[in-house]
Length: 152
Image 1: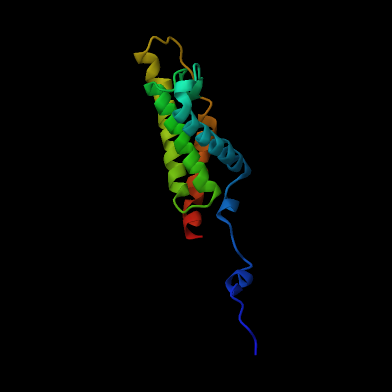
Image 2: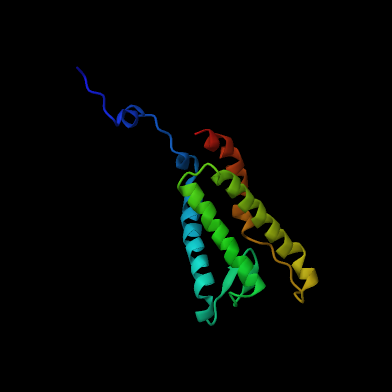
């Protein structure tokens, strides 16, 4: 008489595919950076009253005041990026959709900072945002792996 193992489903499944393996190395590196950035964003929101001069910058938005409108926008963007990084690293089903939304939001904010803000502020210079070099390939890669990710 052969006894059936209670862990048989784990022993039989040798061809287990990880969603994380769909991500290229550079996205995995940025995932960890923004996972830590999301934690720092939460800490900045919690302890911002005790911080005199905090330099915050993302996508061309910058401030030294964490409790200003720009400070809240930057902090919430870091928290959102941290949530997306959590979803990607821990292989959540919703992660590719959130990553695509994150990339589109980043591209829109970079576009506003490049093309609209110079005309409505006292700034007399035009800048090309370097973040677009990473955001556009990030968007296309996440769109390519979205279906495969959701089917695993």
